[in-house]
Image (cartoon, rainbow, N blue to C red; front, side, top):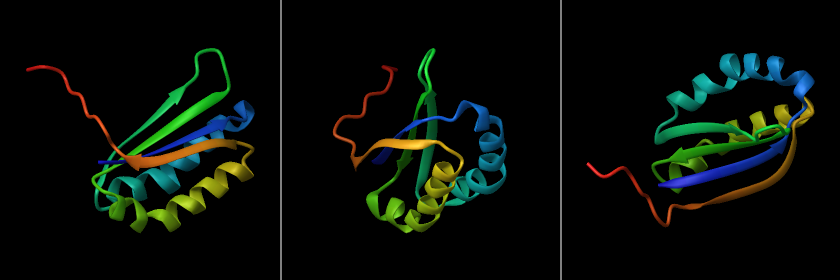
Length: 99
């Protein structure tokens, strides 16, 4: 499993527009991408820092989607959602509920 974590300071005034564009322009491409496993957007309670977590089956799958993702990250910048940090890497530990 390969994960990309993107932290951004969000322009709250443009958040509704961004959500609409993501649902129309980006999410369908992400969901259809080979090797895509999941996406989570976590909003900081009471703040304007959002963390996007994208999970892939492998690094080659993530790499194959890089051009599309880079275009979307630029769109986020253009909408005033400023990137803070990005982390990428293979999962070291995966923990699931006991069954």
